[in-house]
Length: 310
Ligand SMILES: Nc1ncnc2c1ncn2[C@@H]1O[C@H](COP(=O)(O)OP(=O)(O)O)[C@@H](O)[C@H]1O
Ligand SMILES: [Mg+2]
Image 1 (cartoon, rainbow, N blue to C red):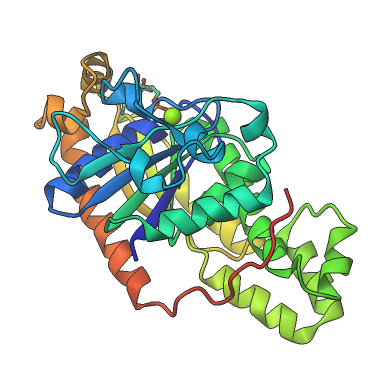
Image 2 (image 1 turned 180 degrees about the vertical axis):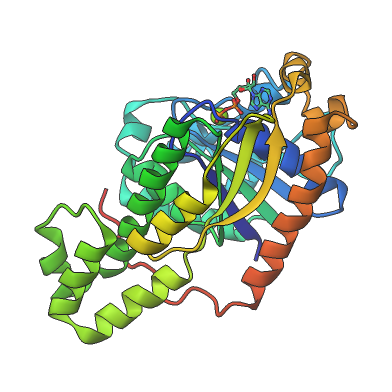
């Protein structure tokens, strides 16, 4: 089964798609069979980053059942190593806006069956249920932020809500914990855990175990020598209020080569391999592979969420 890595950010425009395209290409160059999946509903543009202007088919075809096999919409990318393919994203349509739970489950089932080693999912910005669910379907969780304080705050909010959603989805199909949880709008993970704990001690243990396994990693993008990002503060906040450890996977500098490469429809690691941003991806790729190896050693999914309410 492939390892699924989701990449999210909370705030848009921080370089998530840039990270997905470059990381995907470097992983493929190392011989891993990689599929990029553009799940940024409404903001899908990964195909453009690779100069694929008219994708033969997209996730829309899958959601509308015009294409029954996800594998068939994983298109090889031109000018890149053969093990790299892309599943292009879908626009904001009524179908995607109201994506039923069954369609999300079908997508997850098909992702797990794809003929690949690594699947990189570009999750859209924001904290909608779709975004949180697409993020949480992965085995490894990557996040991207810039040193901009609003980007860091949005990331904190995103990770907190993702943690809440992760615990809630595990219990939504379980009685009686589900009933206790459904009636409330939770603002913190502590509130969720307290509500679970009041109903079932075993449930509380399971929820805490799930959170221990939820360890997103952070890539900082657009760093300059003047950037003063207090990652320790962010890590402490997450530990204290979400119970989650956030590791920093690497820094990508602000680099004009990135914009130039986008104008040429190429990842910067291909367009300008010696550019500072491109060089930063070497270490990040190694660190991501280490994450994948660690994940493979973990016991597989503690508890498959039974039901997701959208
Ligand atoms: N390291 C960087 N240096 C300079 N510009 C960057 C860098 N990373 C991203 N950008 C700029 O930010 C824009 C948005 O990046 P993108 O990956 O599309 O963001 P997202 O997917 O998070 O919305 C890019 O088009 C590029 O111009
Ligand atoms: Mg994007």
